[in-house]
Image (cartoon, rainbow, N blue to C red; front, side, top):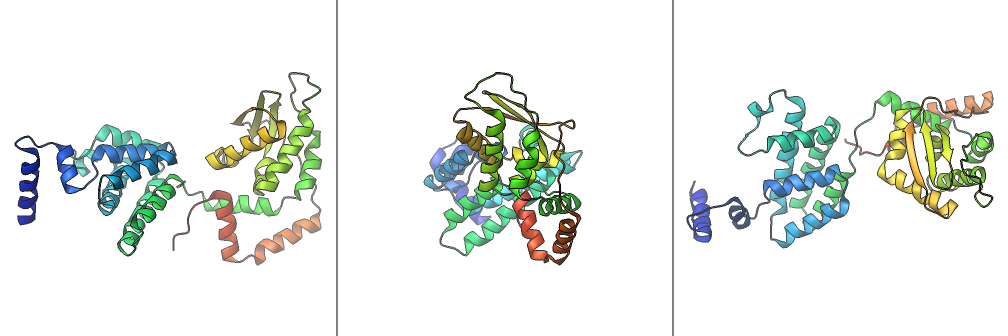
Length: 313
């Protein structure tokens, strides 16, 4: 109570008779609710540059990052309460919360994501107390928050991993898929659609081998001088290719191969024709044996390569 009275005296000395939230935040070195709401909005938009800029401004203003960690952890807790409760106003302190903003942000996250974010920020606070690099630890934690994704069903992950192991070499896939029918709506002798598509697949699989699996699950709907439209038969693969890093890589390779800006569109399309793999029975048995002999560590690493995420021990 004495500490509270001392702080109140400081606020009155600074503000006079009219005390405002911003003044209290400045004196106590805490980050206000509006700033935290903006940080979470940037996490939803995956706006890494704005997140780091916001952190640097907070540090320059002399705010305590440990306090911010605790406030963020509480904020993620509130988002989870919004997600789980039919009457969140009973659980939350309505005077301290902006309920409409919390509800909108909670709807933008999966429950798994909020739980992982809470774990990341809690771990960061613990590490910051033991390190002289508190700001760096906090910045890396914020970037990690922006990369959090929901957990996938274990059965689906194992199925996807096994399908990667069962793929023939990249060259074989390219040869089999060379018979795909591509819609070339504009005749242009300088733009060889079929050849460019084969080069795109070869280049992107070389840069990131997991695309061998992704491209084996899709078909070309349309490819001309302005547009490349790909259809995927399953939503899991579509979501993986839509991931910001993978989608950026796909666009970069398309522009590199075609030497022009081409709009890339991805969609779920159950009618696309997926080439049939021509794998010998003996090769299939070898693959099955290889999967059986895989260690737990190798399987987990394969899962991380495909889906991202973090191992929680």
